[in-house]
Image (tube, rainbow, N blue to C red; front, side):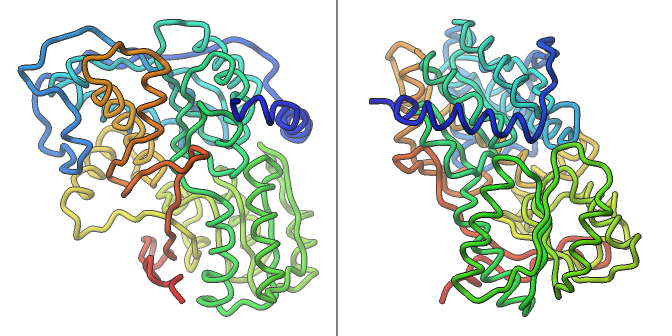
Length: 417
């Protein structure tokens, strides 16, 4: 029996709560784009990981085109991440197609703007599900959007592979739901125990988080760990997506006198930081969610100095392959990448590898899903092997902002006891 059938009623209730909290765009209009014709030339920056070997080779027969749907917030609060999806995925498609495709099949992306809205995302997911030319769906960015789409892909029996959904309740909703970001049931406890308590020496913490499926999961996992280790949460406040004025929440946090504040979000982290500093409050800050976002540094300037973040990935300047990939991405996007577009890139290679593993069999939605579930792959973001639930386990490091740049404060071994 499908996981989606078991959790359908629970998910419906969660969607209602999430939509009430976060709002929806109401409209059903879609915007989208497709990739350009694959480049014939070899790229000097092609990844040297296992992903670069997915293609069928320059002499492989052209068996046709396989279309993949993409859901991403190309506009709205999380547009940086949606644009990152678009660029990262197109990089992968161009590389694969230039080498002859995935087992001789060329890949084509159909990208639609979910705007980061759950209703919009589910409407678009339905369009993809009803289009029999779409063999799998990549996206969406937020856990809430992916959870809103779960029943749709379950019914249509089409894979929904998210680069970034990390709410542990998402992937178990359906046998067709997958994610490669890792889980908030692991990252949020790491933030409490290792980033704040062990590294920063925090004792009394204030929390401000987005009231979404992802944000609620992050806070709940953080809170439970804080109780276990004796980290005192003196105040916790939350806000809805697209909130602009955080002054009343900041006042409440400041009145509780925490020695550290952690922000749990992706899109609004810069605004929260700037408003905290504009209030004249110099409390040490940490963030869970944005990764090593260069736009965050650009938007906060000196206000972002000293910020600590958790991350399952870092572009090590000593790694020539990662540096080449980072430079190519930046040249195409106009901004530096975080782990999010790197995961998006890996997702395309995961689908390509699944197609390759089908071999001479018929390429169907079900066949892609079945090969994906048992894949053991190493991409630019590291090893990827799905659990029975359809998600993966990752390790985390501590990074910080120093002199306008991210540096690694503690590596993956910091969590080893």
